View (cartoon, rainbow, N blue to C red):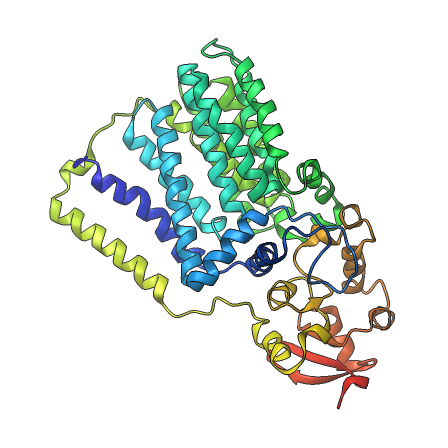
Length: 468
């Protein structure tokens, strides 16, 4: 243990440093997530959309477990508490990914640490944040680890934990439930007779059955098929757009994918079919949507340790003086803590105008127009609003009423008349940011509204008949 302590410091601290340097923030979706979690704690599981101006929209809260956890931690420990919780999840992910790599590489620690640090650092930069997806990433890594344990031992007892993982997934972030099964599918194709296939198939069946144990039953599992694959979402939500050269993010990650393919096929080892299928399958997921890149990183990087496990496993740390190791560890820890505790604003830009409404009007009387991004904090403050980032909620396929999101899109594109839109909903207040289509339109013709408060990037309007 004395020989590998320094390696562990590098293993865990480097991804944490990448997280706090590039992704130490409160994601905008966090605010409606904790409000929904708070709602579940106080009222049980909703079947209609809370915190919206529309009546009786059907609703399935797919990430209620994450919402409850986030809500509890934020209420108890505040902003820093939730950020340290995310770091804690990152540490657990790093541990299991490292154990996965050690298993696949036949205990080659050096290559395992290198691949783990690269994998977790890439995830930490873009994907490890205050969203339910962090639980999905952890579960996917555990699934891969268990499947590798099984494939190496043919001991079906390792598979017993997977139905429990699926139960957790369906109650914490069900949108990605079937991704657990998808990550297991390559292990069905066993071309070397190392292990039996039937126990995997039986386990998958039990995983689906345990996944049904959730407040919404089978509708929860099938919700994803109504929520995505629709052009309106792909056109307007960045993370659902395909990977391409059109952005710096796309260029960098396509380059990373290319490097991984070169490393795979430059190896002199025969590649097991399960690793090839994981590589090809997650490549498809990466090019399908930007957020699928995270699945490529998790599902394809670890196989590199198998292909390069014959690289000498030299204990490099023994050539580094102990005092240098201690200094490096102290410096990394100090830098991490300094960056974390540098004063910064973790709240969204709309906080000040929304707080103004909360402090000056009766919340229950407000019927507020908001843009897509500003609705999250509005929901958090308990104001009923017209739009928030839960895009799938506003699709007719899910809410069984009408396509609210399409109407909002048409408004922003100038396809429908904004005066008719405002007349239809008769909002008490409008929260308009500079990026909103209505910002310039209302400056020229404010219809039945008047500005009551201005900020650098926002204007608050009130319906004229409500003025005292």
